[in-house]
Length: 492
Ligand code: NAD
Image (cartoon, rainbow, N blue to C red; front, side):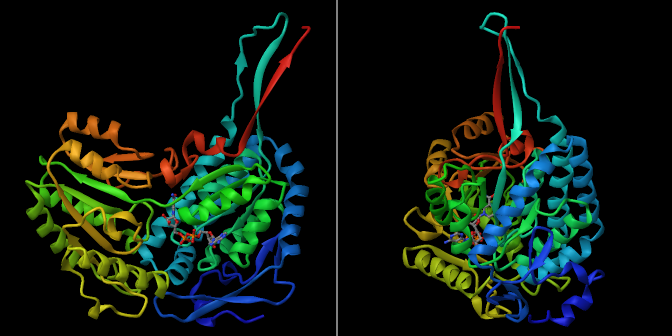
């Protein structure tokens, strides 16, 4: 087995958090055929370690382990599961610095953002630990003589959780905490780009007393592992966060076993600025909503729609704020934007910008000459963006901002809804009538008015249209892992 880069291990307060193995049935496991893949620091292009690629029978072994452990986990009282989850939460918080460092090295995001993600990810564990105590069934007034009717909530069974690389820790806890609290064992398949955050969570879950077989992390060739998990009848639920393209594929693959599906897919958020807004205030918010995680965020404000009366002033403030952003290695204190995840992402961003310019957009700012490395992309501002451009149609997942002027509310509603995506929309205006009109008319799962921050444990996160199915977080987040069993007690 290849040894980890010693520099990384030495920087951690607890080097045991950095694991190069899969975690199945409470054991650290290497690939039975010895296949491995390197994990790359996107800022430097250097390998920070390796992960094993498991074989099909090892993925099946994870399902066997989860099946065996399920009986015991579901039989625990809700407050007993709550205690284990709270212990997990405490350990995640106690190791926040190490978890953030691991995340910055494998994902590239600035260290303060990584710390923020650990905090955000941990908050779901605490919230669902408590919510697990409130999975109430109901009593139904009977229409049958001498009968008592009601419902019970029961864990759905083994849940496979497939997660992306842009939020390597929080996308796991947002699913796993809900599933575990509901009484379900989980098999996590993290993105191969960012496996170490997932493996550190497994190490801490073990220390928290979560039994062997209940929290498993499998690694392997993504399409192969997912195919096995989707085809496996003992896996009862699939929760996926990632691109709409892969989401569609997994949906097809789950059809054979009719699984419970939660899909958190891509977004292409509009950011609407009303004529009454202070253009500077709105521009600062739009920059924050666009450049988080270097634009690699499903909530990124991709299509910025500004009322024509304040368009020019808005563009000026946006460009000035954007120019003050520092692009660099996430470990450096002054960095606002880290690298993109790999070279292909940089090439895709460049192609989207070229396409926009060739179709008549204006490049206001965004010289790539100054990029500090081959995986970096300097923030780009385009104006005059129109619907036939890729920057409008596709989720660019890069620091590429496109601005379009509009004339009235009906026009901007049509523009905002002109996409296959429906995850999140931002509205900036203080006009209450406009707020209500837009909020009702926007075809999105989430609408945030005058606030960049919108997510967190108590609220339902999810999209409509081709942004997905189901919700994470909030009371409905745990329902994704529960079945409703109706009972009729007759002849009473
Ligand atoms: P992706 O779809 O490429 O990968 C997501 C996961 O699927 C990873 O674990 C990957 O290994 C796996 N995968 C990749 N190809 C596969 C295949 N052919 N078969 C089975 N599994 C496969 O997405 P990504 O690039 O890792 O993440 C970015 C996407 O995730 C964006 O579209 C973004 O909007 C979306 N996202 C959505 C949310 C949300 O909550 N809605 C949150 C974060 C990211």
